[in-house]
Length: 446
Image (cartoon, rainbow, N blue to C red; front, side, top):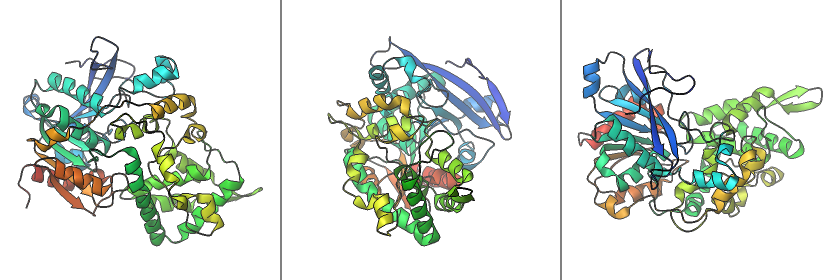
């Protein structure tokens, strides 16, 4: 087991109220098919209840948490709360920074030039999909658990990874819990986004029903952006299309309320007339920034690629079939401006400051063909691992129909379909969501 803390700021073990946190570092191959080649370093944070004795700690089964994304590091806990609070009742938890994220050999505008040319950067990032993440997990598991299977909790993209895990290494799994993360097994990117735009429209109009004044505020912002150049504090150019992406908030349980509060601060009177308020710009920058997570843009569509076709900026191409999302035209026709969610577009490589240096790398990934399969439907049909999944009935980010089709395709998978939560239900619902999924997986649900 590689547990020696290395690098700036690394520590072995720290305490928080209710928690004992231990750093783990693992060296793994960049390409698992070439284990003698380049290696990268992964980071995982072990979490146990603070009052756990050393003997008890060694007896606890492991639970691996796989974060959503792609491109985001694992949760950084501050005290015992939420789903983690429930998990610590009976597990030793590993919060893994998936390759390229957090403290795991990060892949950003600052570090990717170390890999060489844009072509070399794209080849490097082609090894950052769910199949490689699962192989990472298997190496880590053998070092941490002594070979014993562990439980995996996959949120969103982490759930996609969990289905890949069930496909290619089910022997490493004791139980699988999935929240908002059942992918379409054979669903390509174009099909994903054809289903996504109508959901974005529904979510936007539902927000305007809740906060009617926001429709006028959004039109006013779009009208302003069409006539003025606005640059956010971290350097992102705020165009009407970029502003529409604040709709990503509508996929979370409190997102509609957060969006309303953001819009309340949109304008301020200045000597030059009404301008976007600095407070508003700062909040929008926090929502839109990709400085810490460029992989969310660079690799987003690749999570749906499983054949010889390039993704070719799928969300951008598919959007042409939904002209109602033209924000400037909506303002001209006095219609509600529809907001977007997690879609990525080639113009982001110009508007978003942290993505501009990675423009050619992103283009090469969008043009890439020959992506391999991420799931094995035949093996999933023979699954013997207990699996439970929370499906949110109108999830902004993951199509419910695609998720239900996959649930039917995985033998023994039990579902909890609910409209009580949005995509972040495992965070908003915490202990309740974990209780429900564990009961389903253990066949004790009533």
